[in-house]
Image (cartoon, helix red, strand yellow):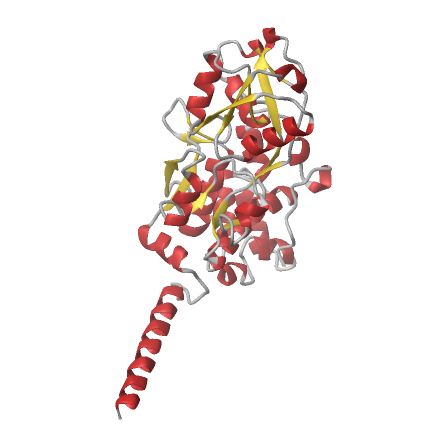
Length: 356
């Protein structure tokens, strides 16, 4: 008798847990959603971790507004989910804070020039789920132009500033070890500390992502006083990420970013979006365009997103090419060449799987 009572109570607990799980996963429109997505919708805003001080990627501009490629990624996700790219709360995170902030739920999405690696992706490592890479970079070295430092061997016996807890720290150590160059790494928890040390002459050179150094150099009074060495010592695919425990949320972010890339491939911009949308609605034979813009099909429902999630993202920030040019390319202070970050149809690595 006692055993039967215990079994009934056990079954009741299981049913309660299952019911709570179903409630947590049930979306407003009956589509598949996640606990994270339900939390974001209930909050009414996306919590996005970014650098906050890195021109071109995540920084506060002269108008007091967050700007940059990573910031626009956050706004695209907010627009796709909530219908408004301004429904984002940004959190400035340094390299040592970023993964803890994501795993603790302090932020929903990390878009902070973070390199995708095996150990960061693996469940036994940081346990992140990476979205598509939004910027293909490489690690380099910058030194004062008048220092005479032109290649790595010129750093023998000298101190080099690096951000602590990053792939930059590990890559530099590996490369100098391979080449048999003894040097002194000076490690810093924040980039502000690292750049302050470099500009005060504590180190002979600084080493981190080439785009990051170009960004900092661009805001100096005399950028020509500092030179980027030609060496590229690593692959640095900078990639937004979510926590690995919520695959539906990771899928949603992944396909929102792919949507920005696919929009560029299809020639859909902020300027012509409304015309393209009208064209899709008017012509039932435009099957691919109608599905991509959510006029027909169930892509949004399958991801737990509104049917027009791609439209909302493009309307908020434009396609990938527009985001790149505005923040890093010819329309920006950095004026970086797109290089590997061109579309695959133009010889680059930016590629979206089919929206099918």
